[in-house]
Image (tube, rainbow over all chains, first blue to last red; front, side):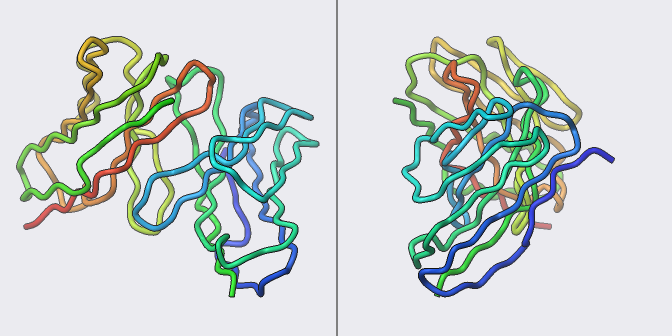
Length: 113
Length: 109
């Protein structure tokens, strides 16, 4: 079944640690996105990619980086985690055209202590 | 820039009809989308309006009026499972969605 997977589901780490949030999709979508969402709040775009070797920063300033070496894989890395990074991170992918909508992963809930 | 405003919370009873509004300020966009998100869950795509007018999908309908900078999601025959947050979103001609502030819908028995 085509889907989009995020790991880990929950993560608690100490300040200063480097972490990578994983996102993979099996739908062959070229477009992938990372959003940050605090509980009950709106989603903010932090990174996006239109295909392999394509990455762009979103509207929300972020201290994270992304890579897109393979179509199906779009990991997000925080080089040095801080308490202000505590949030939920949602990965999404889409086909060409918005008629089909975005498919979101289940998210990673990150807590930095 | 773009901003999409929604009411923060709406309440209704089972079987009722509820309308969730979305007003926006943006210089231009391809269309208006709606997403549903249950607590602790991922947003799921509900509908997309590329053109002005009403789009119906089962119990849910979505409306767009570009001249009024306004859209809404209409939920009919409300069920308890419809309790969730609902987000409108636009694509400002850049193929990446900008989401609204979100509306929390609570359905009571």
